[in-house]
Length: 118
Image 1 (cartoon, helix red, strand yellow):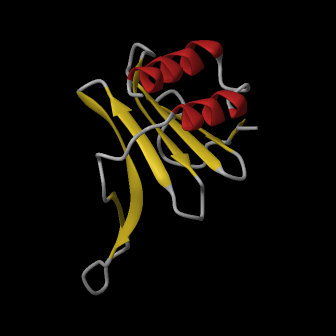
Image 2 (tube, rainbow, N blue to C red):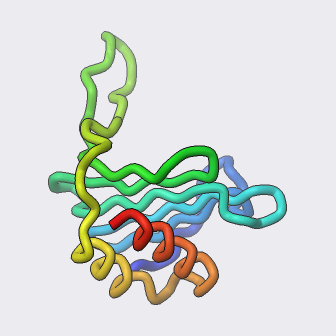
């Protein structure tokens, strides 16, 4: 079950909230008026991670997460290698079953966006 993480970043908790369990991570970003700006759901943590990303300025995307080889002396960069992967009803159900601790307003928003992309 996804549980809220405490915030140890410089970003204010009003701007970003994170939830995590053993196989899934959810990050929500908020506007100044507390409306959702975007979110990212990462499935299969530490395995072959897949990410569902949405923000209000672009379409939702779903694909594999990869680590790119950086230039010498730079940090590893994580990107998506395939924005055309198919988001399935099984993934939607997986998120739905693990997201009981996410506030209803945010949870329903994420579920609607995911459902619209099946």
